[in-house]
Length: 166
Image (tube, one colour):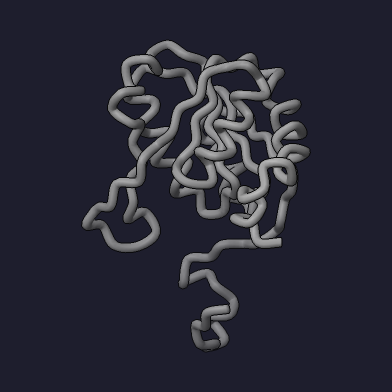
């Protein structure tokens, strides 16, 4: 099943929400945040399950090229309420980590205290590295090994393999 389809049927999503919420609860967070769209839907469901507040990050296009071309910012009406809160940041999937990295940077500027990253699916090593860099716990349900290479370290690039899209 395609991940976005999981969110179209809340009853189908619920067992995964429960499983991830059961891992996040031990961190005693006040608020669960997520980047739009999948992360925000997941954050709202987990917050409801835990009986805590929910917040979301809006996508802000930038002029930067490449992987980090989108910023994520807390909705203006939510910024003041974040100060001093113990928080979780969740996303449906974390691979390169650009959405959660931008979300964390903005959240920290409000004075919130991030404690844990969460995801339904962690793809590759970046989520663990990001959590370790920021001294955060990482909670997930599925771990899919998928190394991400810079071109100079990519074994397929070294073989001269062409870039293709699935």
